[in-house]
Figure (cartoon, rainbow, N blue to C red):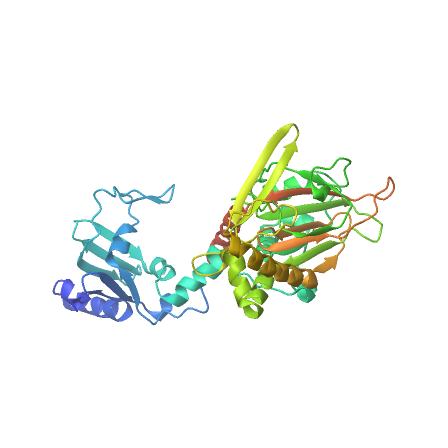
Length: 429
């Protein structure tokens, strides 16, 4: 192991410089390991704001990553916050030629073999440390809040209620609403005006509406000659919307303007991630089938004179590379009669799917929104449905809906968190 310690890289000090450099080495030390890594030992007083993080342990960074992430104006465009490297000329075998640290500014300074100098703030390095704990904290908090799965019986405990005026006027209320959606997949906004613009106001408070085949805002009511089963007064089985889209709209906003006074018309909600958990624990082989078998989902029809034929193939339970749930697909009406899989996999899939549907139906929580309520939920996670209701001239149900995408929600949530953190830092300084 080749180690270049700080005191060998700083020129011979005067007595005054020695006292300063001695303090510097005690508070921040930096070494090079194997010509490929830089190891920084930070001082505990420079801990980042995360309460669960300790800073006494050394921080180890690949040299090439440090060089790639130099924040000087030559390497980084500050307005767009983007690196400017000409990658054809970038040396992935770049080496550290000199290390320095500055205790007063809490910075690491590196002279590279490509004759460039980089300066890194200790806090910036701590926030990007490669150890497992720090990486997970970032992923679970800032990147995407970690979801908490729930049983139907827990709905009243996990469901958070927000006031429409607060969400529209307060960034703190907006942040709390979006966090609730991210963590639990559902939240209700109450006391909204009986106005068709409510869903648009909420969507534009976050970003913008996601347009689909059915337009931007859509009306859920009993319609003569309905071209979608949602536009009937019959019971609507549990499902996720638009599974036939590769980039499925992520979040539903459903504003109740008029609620049926009949016995029916109640919402049904199920946490699809919880049902997937149960399948994995109780029926592991069936879980594997539902996570691996591609299903053909489709939607054929026309809207406002425009014909469409949407198809997407994806499993019921979708996973990322780490095995985390990314999406649940489920809609009995919108499974294609084409099932493009090997013959011997068809019957096992049906048997597995039947167990998933049964568990979801048994776990469904039923509740009824009232006029002025806005039900918001994660369409790539929750299954939703509706009990049937009587529809007459004097007993109608009228819901205005729209979609948001999670990319837009997460973006807004990060902006709000960064703004809140900056405000808190400014107040404490």
